[in-house]
Length: 208
Image 1 (cartoon, helix red, strand yellow):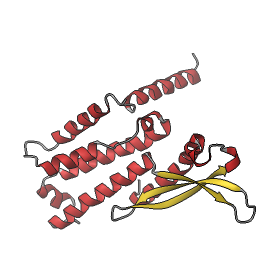
Image 2 (cartoon, one colour; image 1 turned 60 degrees about the vertical axis):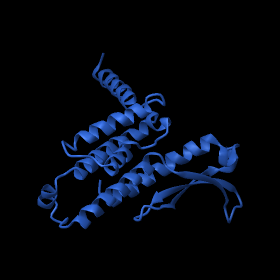
Image 3 (tube, one colour; image 1 turned 90 degrees about the vertical axis):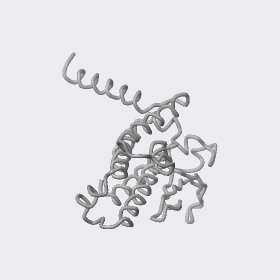
Image 4 (cartoon, rainbow, N blue to C red; image 1 turned 45 degrees about the horizontal axis):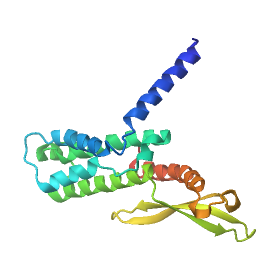
């Protein structure tokens, strides 16, 4: 086997491994979430855990994604980014107060720390919207040509945590999608177009 063949074989093996790692089924989805939850809770150490703590860590662990999210290779980069964000969030949440004041000089009171936790939650909500976009497909009419075309509109999370409709991309002429706004291919094509827009906006906000 030549060097190109070796590289391609290696890439295929890596993709197969990633597919296994990022593809929980409905049968073990809850088990996967539970495993992440338990791993996150270990970072708490020996301290006591309130119901609020447990609920927050479960929220961080459970993304609520559809099973198809894990099958799409285009999502693997986003899922890797999500894993890092969640670990960073949990580590900050369980950090000792003296460590916070020593390593985060901009956080000099409890209110600042509470606000930082809120910012983590907003960031987590936004990245989840990147990975599994919340969208609507609509039919529009071009004002000059009167041609009908489909577009996709995606929701975002504003700074207060509210869902707002923010991004729109044209998918293509309506005649190419016989199912109209219910056409599955139109939805798939639309998500492929809008997802990079969402991620670019996310990267611009968080400088990643």
